[in-house]
Image (cartoon, rainbow, N blue to C red; front, side):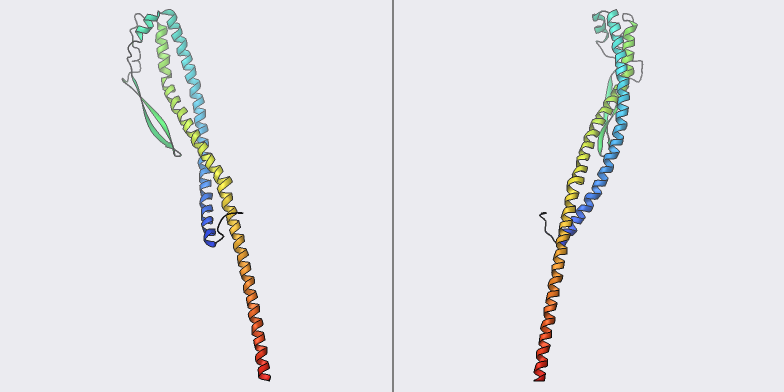
Amino acid sequence: MPTVNPTRMELTRLKGKLATASRGHKLLKDKRDELMRQFLDLVRVNMSLRQRVEEGLKTANKNFALARAAMSDETVEVAFMASKQEIEVEVAPKNVMSVNIPQFTVKTRTSDESDIYSYGFAFTSSDLDDAVSSLAAVQADMVKLAEVEKACQLMAAEIEKTRRRVNALEHIMIPQYQKDIKYISMKLDENERSTQIRLMKVKDMMLEEAHHYKEKEEKKAAG
């Protein structure tokens, strides 16, 4: 039995809440569907990027292994003792369906793409050059992969939160409002029928009393 006050004011209030909940339910469903669409697009991009990054790192590791085989450990360590190029990653938020996903912008100390070797070429092998070059080639994809994976995590969390809200509205709040509205409407109808029955009884009693009064008056007039 619903614990609501069966009044017309309460009925109006609940109908307003039901209308608001229904509109919110539709908007949240649309948001969830759009989030899912964009999330799946990001997942496909993520898979492609991850495949390229893994292939690039595999190539870089292979070249580094060849370089270590051709050079002494001391030579490799000296070659990378001082870095020549610097990379700075700036993060800016981008709002997608109320989700702030990060956007990474990479800036290097110099604009020269070939300015990646921190050593001279006299005492190093070409395998080391290939290793550094292959690692530099995969750098942009690695940064983009980090950006996309973080976006996927944030959007997945927002999808789950939106899904819970949609389910709460669809299976709890809206049915409860509908149930309460039905209960109040039935109670008001019952009260209205009871009132009509009482009014009809009062009317019959008044008519009967008026009839008896008329009969009395007629008897008095005849006597």
